[in-house]
Length: 202
Image (spheres, rainbow, N blue to C red):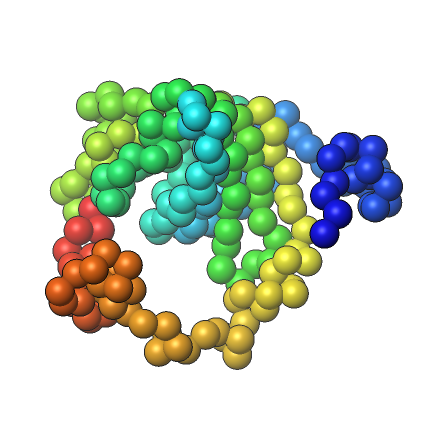
């Protein structure tokens, strides 16, 4: 297997990008980007730690849970998770952040790159309250780049096509997989896990 070690060697394998692909990168959120964020119930968050290791994690809630503060800033509430704090500790070491917004049924995605700060202002947290519960923190993302990404990956994967959905029974439950990986004596059933999740969403 031949390893590519230079940009020149890599570029020889690919045609030059179309002018439109280069020009579409915006320095701020225009009306189309803002609308995309408002309709997105899911965003993938990429970060890099002080040790150089990259991490991507999902964040999701009702459409519009990521708030557009203005054309150059986004606010993302941090809802309860596994408390590993991978993204947050990465951002403390390296504020660079990459976001990929997804809207179910829409094959295009929105990419936003920038830098992030972690905030815990009481008034800000209160503004993201759901069912009487506030997020522990809110990310404020300063937008450096925003651009729409083409539909090819989702067209190829048929990710939003119900006919292509995978039967959940083809995988063991999360509890079974963790039992095997961690050597646990018993496994939480899928139904038990879902019920536990429901009680700790916010």
